[in-house]
Length: 132
Image 1: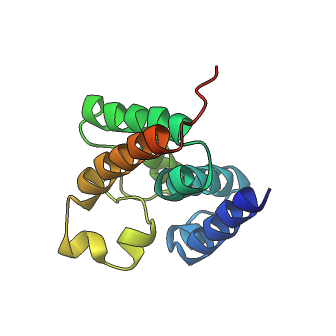
Image 2: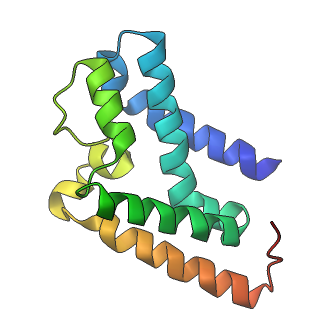
């Protein structure tokens, strides 16, 4: 239960400092944005706090999605459209908000595979149960 509370707290923090939040005027657009932040925080921290096998599968799916969608997240495109923001604007996660992505433009392509490797390490080291 503590892990979920940590994820929710970090999500709320990232969500409230996202400048897009103030540009979105409808409840629907704010809900889409919030869900996107949940996904973002799960990608960054879920492997450390929850089952690394499920996190690995999810992260690989996100990478495949980016590859097959011209390096774009469909949720970002939908949210930008809903909020009246130019479709080329990127999702404002911590890396964007803190300008880390400006210094390292492809940092997500480094972090996600690294998180996958960490998940694999945890799965092997902790003998994580893989159940469906």
